[in-house]
Image 1 (cartoon, protein in one colour):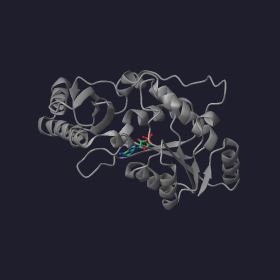
Image 2: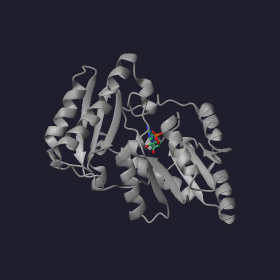
Image 3: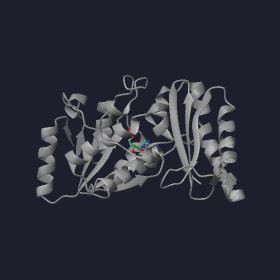
Image 4: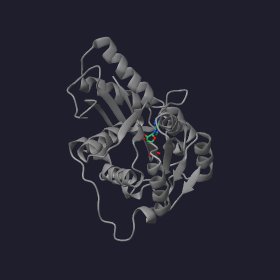
Amino acid sequence: MNVVTEIALLREEITSWKKEEHSIGLVPTMGFLHEGHLSLVREARTRCDKLVTSIFVNPLQFGANEDLDRYPKTLQRDTQLLEREGVDLLFCPQPAAMYQKGFQTSVTLGEIASNLCGSSRPGHFEGVATVVCKLFNLISPDIAVFGQKDYQQLMIIQQLVEDLNFPVEIIGCPIVREPDGLAMSSRNKYLTDAERKEAVRLYKALIQARQMIEEQGICPSVQVKRSVQDMIEESPLCRVDYVAVVNAQTLSPVERAKQGDIIAVAVFLNKTRLIDNMLL
Ligand code: AMP
């Protein structure tokens, strides 16, 4: 596996692959890889000739009081894992290489980024969209794979690709979970043992919501959201940031929850913010 930090070297490799008419796949990540990330890599591996994974903790998508400075970095271990999965190139630039002095352009997003994490983390998705556009321009992938764990991010990127005419197919992969149901996340590492025990409430509450819809068919969203919030906040360690029932495509809130909608949650355990979602 070729490990590249410089943009010029990345471009050289991409150009030579394109000349040989190889199809290219991309899996963007922020590193500290777990089985969730590796599931995307495995999916991408089956769909392209040459596979690029990026590891870049993108400062543009972190708010002032978020965890940019303490975000875990394990590049050596990540490199070994990606090598084992048959990745061809790991792109791991320094922030200064991605955002050169004087950088001042960014992507603006509409409605789709306005609620859920978009309202809790102002500027976050603009930062994500901007870095993803840069990666698409640098790598020209034929396919790019993202996780449904970040469901709003996946929908925003699909919209962005359509709106800005990127010739790339976006593939969404299912959420990979720990044996007890907690969605795998790099941020789970921040949890104390006591918080980790309570964190499974996110999953359990979503399952309960799904059961409500299975049993009752259509159900007022307020009722579903209330049951999720109550179950999570039964623990004094958990503080709900949001619970929402939204249309799976537009992400607009729905009055009446039904099969095919998405229920999404964000929860603080002390300073650690976890997200999860489920198709009803
Ligand atoms: P991150 O490193 O957190 O930026 O995530 C990189 C990619 O991995 C994103 O497309 C995420 O949606 C995806 N991802 C993260 N956790 C999971 C998970 N538990 N299951 C599936 N995909 C995931």
